[in-house]
Length: 233
Image 1 (spheres, rainbow, N blue to C red):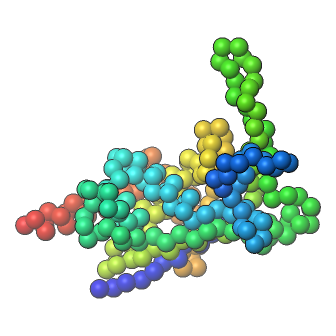
Image 2 (image 1 turned 180 degrees about the vertical axis):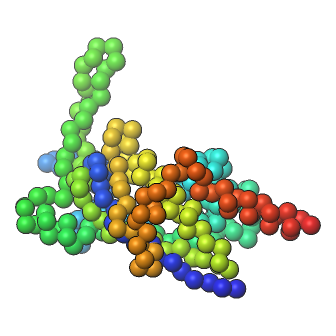
Image 3 (image 1 turned 180 degrees about the horizontal axis):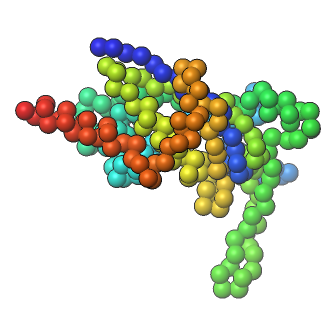
């Protein structure tokens, strides 16, 4: 059995204010109602690898028909004990490994030079649909548009069955959707930049992916279906 690990690297650029919450349910005097998650050592916001994994898994699940146990979903992200339709051999196996994404050195230096904070506070409220009056004011912390994070992801490849096109297609779905909370209100639009695989530039290849015009999973689904048919024989 041949086994390699491919490294996908690049930059995540925040296009609209990004909020990945810390789960804080307490309101502190002089603080924000809804802070973003931060590195406890540096105080800098970051993107947890778990947030990327969860959103990408969900988007691929929707793209392949909404089935948690779809073979491409379980191959890339692993399958839990609750995924009854998943092959037992795949349960617990994850081909993708995610890392937390930290602010780039260049962006950190830019903010320091211009004395700009890492985040902004956005005031929000709800509207009474009957009276049109604003109520329940609150403030939400967001990572500034333009912020850049280092992005790293690894993909395990067994026996030359390379699912890189599916991974890149799923990343393209994430660009079309949103990351973090309040995506329906305009938060969390991101873009992937400076993408490489094992040091090779793939940004043009990534930019050309059009997931809603040409399926990035069809070839793999056909291959798996043929393999299953042969196994049955």
